[in-house]
Structure formats: structure tokens, C-alpha cells
Length: 448
Image (cartoon, rainbow, N blue to C red; front, side, top):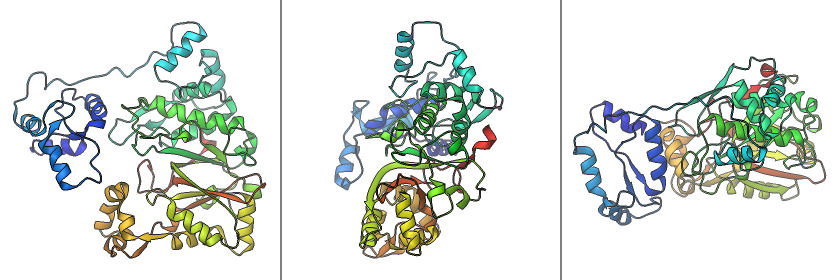
């Protein structure tokens, strides 16, 4: 829509075309942008992978939403004079009442569910007393703006303050001492409720002394539901994201085709004391005594394995090449695995470089991806390396899927098995959801 508006401003009439699956989203976006009567045209879904003749049939056929010949809608949209109704804009009252009317707990739980203020699980009702108790966990002013958030690039960014984060922390069942971590996550500006059709989620890693202060679990079951701090901090970030960005409603502000279970909660600490290597935040310029949260945008796939066994190289290559090349892996490995690699002479960086060097696929496979063609190809055409070389490669040439700086390693686990996971988790750009080219890591100490 932004591109269409730019053309309109240049004096070139335009009309947006969407597939019918996105009709509700297209109309809601136009309404939110102040253009409630924007003329839209729609073709059937999908369009990816269809032949030219099949796509031409869409154009020559009927608009499945407006129930008229598709080209008729295009011509009328471009040539019909604007009416008084077309010239009306839309305004919205974005302020919500600070308090709800008193009611029974059952009725209020139902109200929160009906308004989609929850993740559809039961919540702790955010009474005034509970919110005040939560706010005792920070010395930061309750009305301080924490940041801005939106579910997608074409949506308006909404500002939110400390109190709004505290409300969602109460709902998630968090404790006041967790609030600085939740505020730091929210301050990253990366939404845990992205509207991408690819069903993105976020994964959050906590480093520094705050892990021990809150009793977070980096051992057995660290990625599971076995620790109150891990579970409720992640849930609070997810609830905050959906409620401070203007919603997360399937078919409207959320379009993930299959969804992601990471959207419930996805937060864990690194097992720094049991790792042979420097922790993640130290690798990224912070002091060991700093408490930080780092947000990885992905949560799309998980590859798993054990090792390093005699055939670890083949196993790693199979896992790496089975990942999605637009969403690099966050490699989470048990301390047993990390120490074994260390005994073999690998540093964390040299293992990352080995992974980047050995994760290769044919160029035709690399470019046969909607995210790569839409977001990486412009960099390649502009001559930016290493994308330019991948673009120039012959179809059967093997090209690297990742740069070393795309891959990250975090150590955690209970040392009951030498296991590792490669989880979709982009930390640096270019990529949807990454707001900082250096990666979104936030100091928790700023929010104490």
C-alpha cells in the first residue's frame, strides 16, 4: 500500500491488487490508514508456483471478493471519478478506558477472551492492586514510554508505557521482580506477535546475573514448562506484544498460516557457568556483569541431533541444509555438546564459521524462496556481497546459505544427554522483524 500511495503522490493513478485470502486484511489496513473506501481488487489465492496461463486466467476471470470481472474493477477503480464518500477519511479513538466496570471474575475472564486480550488461556485479572504490586518491581516512572510496536511493517506503530506492560505481566502470572526483564523485552521493539503469513515467533535469551536472581532455569527442561520465571516472562512478552500493537486477530492483524506454539511463551536463560565459551551477551559487546535480554526473530523450524559423534559433520550438514535459508539457526546446545566441541579444539566462533562454510545448497534452491527473492534479491542486484555472488552463480553451483554472523550459539541444558537444537532465529538483518542491524539486545538494568 505504501508503494501505491507513493505512485499516487507522483500523479500516477493506482489500485491495489490482493489475493482473496487477504481481503479482510487489505480492507482493515486501508481503514486503519484513513482510507475506508479505498478501491481494492482481488484475485484468487494462491499465485506462487502457478503458470503464466493460470495467472492470466485470474486476470481474465472474476474477482472472487467483489463478484465482478476482475478487469472491470481495475478499470473502474482507475477511471471512475472520486465521490464524496471516497473523499472521507477515517479517524479512530485509540484511548482505552483505564478501568473496566466491576463484575464477577467469570464475566471478566469471558470479556478478556471475547476481546482477544488474552492468548485464550486463563489469565490473572489485572486489578488495580495487582498492577500496583507489579509496578513495585521497577523504579521507572509508570507513564514512561517503553517503545513502539506494530504487527507488520505496513501497520501503524503504537506507543506504550510501563503501566501497560505491567498489566500484561499481571495477566501472564509474572511476579514484580520479573518486570524489568519483561520491560526490556518490550523495549526491543520486536513484536512477539508478528502478522507474517510465515507464522514467525520470537525467542528470547536472558544473560547475566538476573538469571540467578530470578531463579530462571537453564538446566533440565529449560525449554519446557518447568520454571515459573521462564514461562511467565515469555508469556508476558507475548501478551504485551499483542495488546500494545493494536491486536493480534487471525485474519485481521495476524495472518500466520499454520501459527506457532512459540507464540505462547519462548524465553530461557543461557547456562553461562557451565559453558566453555563466553556467554552470548559478552560476544555482543556487553560486560559479564550486565543483565540483558536478546530477541531472536524466527521460531519457524527446529532441527535436532546428538553429538558430536563420529559422524557429527554429516549430521550438522544435514540439519543446516534442512533449515530455511532466510531464517538462520540459533543453535542451542547442551553443555555436554559445547564442552565436547571445545575439547576437539573448536572455539564458538570457529564452530560457527565451520557451519557457515559447510551449509551449502544449489543456487537454484537458494533463490527458489519467496523471502529470499523479495528481501534478499534487491541486495544481490545492488551488488552487495555475499548475495551478489550467489545471484551470479549458475543454477547447479553450490552457494553458502549463511554468513558466519547469521549463526548464533547459546548453551543450555541439564547434561542428561548430549543434545542440540537448531531453531529458526534471526538476530541480525536484513529480515522481517529485525529493527537493528546489530541485533536487538536490551539492558535489563535500565528497567530496574
